[in-house]
Length: 152
Image 1 (cartoon, rainbow, N blue to C red):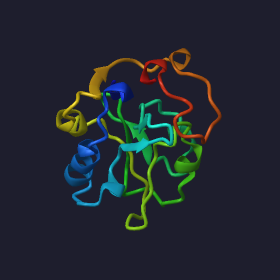
Image 2: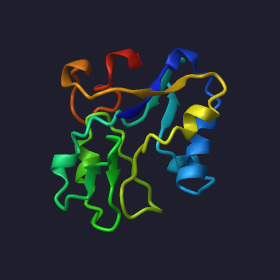
Image 3: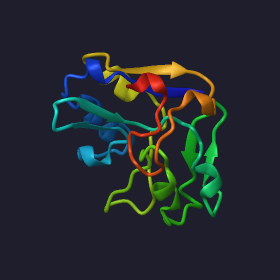
Image 4: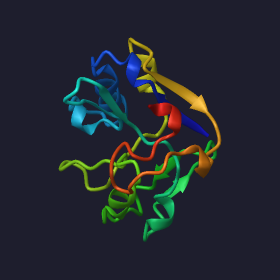
């Protein structure tokens, strides 16, 4: 499965990745519609939040709108999603996004556009299999608490 691996220590906080994602995936100039969120903490460190494709959201969807495609990326079938946002509340990494202009949630589809756009190579497109032991334990619903260990 392909996923976007983050290297916050390399991030120059230019937010080119967010702008590119919003433009290419959401067809918008609003970076709030990006599937990746980069923030600077009070201590100056960078937090990078992007779906790790763990798939824990799939089983909580009441309509079956969440599924894995052939390459293993978690996708949303917008035709059957009812916009209940159960997946948003359940996502252990806080990577399922919402916006007032959208009626259904959205997330990283591991397309790699952000990776190509990043001038500092703080993002990488990786291939790997999801293994629960590979992920840090965290409190569900706290963004950034359940990421692959190497994200931080």
